[in-house]
Length: 241
Image 1 (spheres, rainbow, N blue to C red):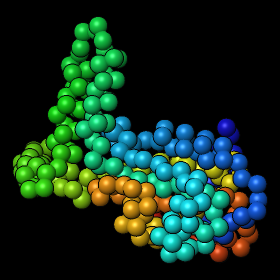
Image 2 (tube, rainbow, N blue to C red):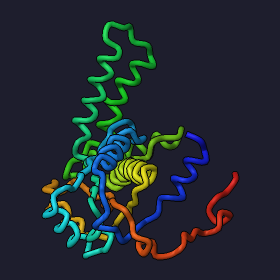
Image 3 (cartoon, rainbow, N blue to C red):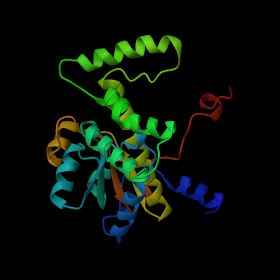
Image 4 (tube, rainbow, N blue to C red):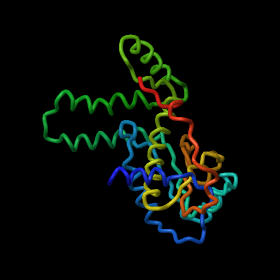
C-alpha cells in the first residue's frame, strides 16, 4: 500500500451520523474489519476485549434506545459494541502461558525465556488480581511506592488503573475496525453517548464488563457529516522535546 492510499483512508474516515438504510450493505466488510481488529496492539497480549457484532434487528432497536435514539444508531445498517473484560485476565494469562510452553517445548530456556514465563505467572496476577476487600490493591500500592523510589516502575495501583489500561487496548481495536471499514468505502461513527448499564443488560454481560464504545456502520448520507473537519492547530497539541 502506498502512503497516498493510507492518507485517503485517514481522510475518508469521518464520524457519520446519518446512514442510507436502503443502500446495499456487504456484511463481509464487517467480518473483515473484526478479523483485523483482533490483530490490534494490546497490553501484554492479554486481549481483554470482546466485540459484539449486532445482526439482530431486535437487539439493534434495543441498543438504539440505550443510545438515546441517536441517528447514528437508529439508521446504521449494523452496530458493533466494543467491550472490556478485566475479569478474563486469568484465562488470558493461562492462554499466553500455554502458547509459550508450546513455543519452547523441548528447548533449554534462556534467562530471557524464563522472564517471559514469569511475566504471565507472576506479573500479570500482580497487575490484574482483584479482591473485594482491597488487599491486593493495598499490596500493589505498597510495592509501587517502594519500588518506584529506586527505578522506573509500572504504576498500576488500583482498579481505576486497570480499567484505563484495558480501555486503551479496546479503543485501539475499535480504531483498527473503523479504519478497515473506511478502506473499503464504508462509514462509521464511534458512540460514547449511551446508558452503559442498559447496554450490558441487553448483551447479558457481567457487571465487571465495560463498554468502550458502540460503532455504527453503513453507507453514510451527505447530511450525516454535520460540519467540516475541525482540529485544534497542530502547534497546540504537537510538541518537540
